[in-house]
Length: 245
Image (cartoon, rainbow, N blue to C red; front, top):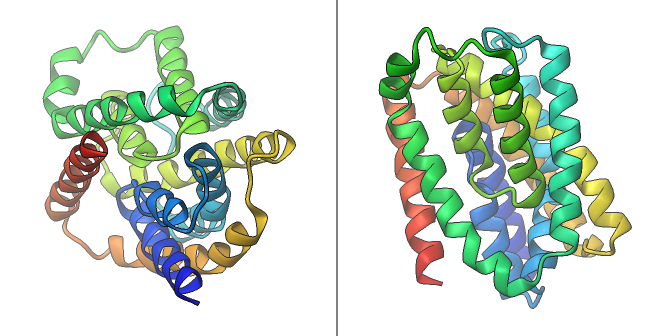
């Protein structure tokens, strides 16, 4: 009973956090590990469980979603599918030791990019119009998302800022849409590779769905400055705790 309650609470809060700032996997991963699931399997299972939350979050932001300047929505979503598949395939062959070592560094990088995104965007203005560079940056981030879902939202928000988006709600809507799409392909590969604990994933899906929808609706009422500060605080907290593991 305790394990079930823990997974439900973790999935609900993670779904809401992913809709607003990203980082929900930081809650689902340790919750699953505490119930006895190995780390790599816990990562894959948590990603599958949060898929409904991404879908409901994308629906909640459907009126705000816009592609970043210089990239069509079709190209962006196609790159998301490709990157998600490549990242998931990489996870299938990654040992637990390697997985544990790279996660905190990736989270710290994502948080720094988002925190200093406006300044970096300003300094790169006029030099970030190369379509190939834009496409490769999207592919790199979505590979990360297919490999490890934790902090993906923060990294996507940082990327969209660097690509010239300034409306935080539009960025959140696009973040949820891209996250949902790459997670669909990643979840399929996780399942094929036998990395998903389906009992635990099923328990968490409904809670993540509700959390994602409520989180998206609540985020649209928050001042952008508060939302940005909350995202940075979330990223720093996740990074610190992963380093301490």
